[in-house]
Image (tube, rainbow, N blue to C red; front, top):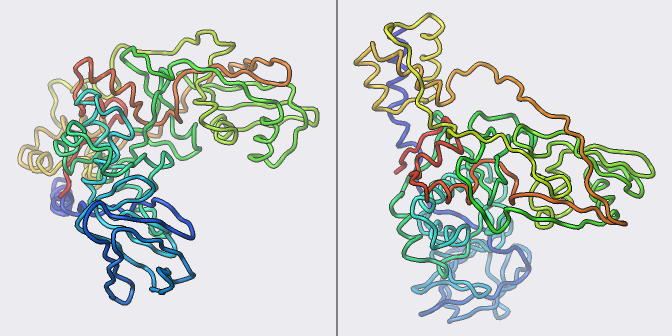
Length: 453
């Protein structure tokens, strides 16, 4: 078994160099015309045939099939716009270059680290605690690299809105947020040998959510719900929203394809162990229909119904908080016996092949076999070789949403889908002395921070 581990280790030693930092392709718009400019100097355009054209300080660009038209001249796409100054579009300034393509629209092609400078001030406050900003930088870097692996067919990596993560270009940069980017340069969050899915949201309302409950995807151990461990208040800690019966009827039909008629009652029929609604039931004059609460929220308007962490009639709902942050508890090691059982030997070999351990740890384990027991426990704490997850308890809580005339009144806490990191929760932890690494360990238990080239 030790020889098998050694072979796998040799295959894994080069992992950190396989992922390279690179340019990010951000879609800014997709329309039939674009007005672009430059802060100083001249705009230079290179078309698909390699022809160079000087466009002056500003240009009106029309899309015409596989060509762009400028002053009645046609140029084959893709076309690349660049210059010595900052590029400008819709009142914002951008580093890098613009690229116009048939499939992607108008893209900002910019170095990864420079892209992050335009994300942090847009996603969180520029005056936030340093460790909260560092946390956001690592999450944002990981997020865009992970998304880029699945977007080849779209022609871009991310959009510039909260459909991915908000990006506002060079005009929002600040020294403090730029420092958070540079101080974490190249750092990403990994789970085993893979980049982690670093979903985040504004405010969890007290407890984050399981990815399987929100989007119906296979559950990932590091994207299971965890409680907030520091009390805090955000601008959306408490909210309420009035939604008409007709809008709810339309939302149900949009998701399910069924018209339930005039909506008479809205029920929360299932909640998770943090109090977040999982399943809702809608009763109308033509029948009833159930759906995932997250689907209902998106169908109505996620800016109106800010989260699915509802509080019945505005009252308090007990959240199962704990005093110890998940992922920060020191794994208790077996005492006295450093040998591994046959099952543990198989487990540690599987963890090694999955990239659970760092290169340094692999070498240390190979050189010091008596440490394998400790590393086996470490691997378990990172999500390696776990048994099938037990089904989490779900409460058939069964409360109804308050109705006033033809409207339903939703009371709730927090803002966002609830999966992964709570930005306001991370800020609260940072103010209590937690480092970015420990904040990430709490919200994404079992993950590790690694550095790419």
